[in-house]
Image (cartoon, rainbow, N blue to C red):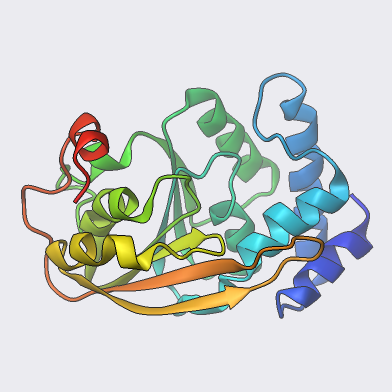
Length: 233
């Protein structure tokens, strides 16, 4: 990938990259494009689009994490935003979660390729981790760029957030907060703020929905995925 595309994407997101980080991003993207020819990791394959819609979009959240925070990326796919954030925020302890085994293998290979430390890729589903004592309410921050509506996404993610931590939902022009007020409250949290930003060449703005965890989530959440989908909070 042309390094200027990487630097320009970082600049628009308010970030200055070290030379080593630029090379790491370059290797990441080239590995992604190579592996994407074998199985579907992303439908965004042009360098400029990857720089804007994957890298820059991920990096707009970079300033929202306290130094040394533990971060879980739910539904990470090819590593966006979690792995892209790890490269520019090496202080973060990042867990990348995805339900698809091939994507997790790709992420594990990429972590080794880039010689990254303090990051792991895990195969699983958020509704299962949220009921597992090893993961429930263990993360300082949880982030998701998944396509689920915010009420459903909140039920999947908030049980994984520590009391006092935060859930960050990456959304489009509609931050979906109005539809999720009840779910957020039931799960022991409150909508803190929504940060809006624009991506080059895209008509509609993007949203970072900041949700603060006040109290422990009731033990009955998260429910099973079929129930969440059929009867959202």
